[in-house]
Image (spheres, rainbow, N blue to C red):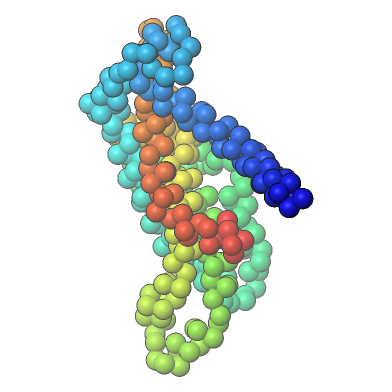
Length: 277
């Protein structure tokens, strides 16, 4: 009887893995297909259906890494994404501290207004940004895109950091002031290490949302600061789409995001535990 019961329990446990396994395969299938396409020629992609390359080639990656019109897009994207992440965190940290520690007139309304900026589609702000930056000569610069992306990244960072800061007891602030700490010293030496996971989570989301945004980045740039997401839309030639190069560019675009996820994976897990992710 006990043997039958153990077998039944074992079968139930094995069945529990079926749904997650199917789900993971479903999620990874497009990425696998993109990877295989990046090692195929255009002729093979368009003429045959195969699960792996029949004529393995690295020419697609060589084209991207040797052509400045391609690899400059990755450099431009990394520049303005890093700039945006730093600016967003620099603005969001004091703002989130104010929302978590102080009560002032209209604080909840202001907090909600910040979140509504994140809810609005980027297309709403494209024309105002374009006219404003044209007047100041900022079109086709990295700082233009970095500042524009602050519109939706700063509210998100404030919302995430406010949750982490609210979980830190106020007694720590009071004890530090009694011990003679100035606010800048307290914030950098004591408070910031306590919310380091929150900073990591906020930096991750700021990086990712700025990295994948296309409409604003494409509108505010021409050549010098053109991001890779915009360059990938210009792969049409006389013979049609260059599918192999486009697939290789897509795989290289995934790498920065995957690296960021790897380094902040523990912070993201803590963010889920606190309910802010």
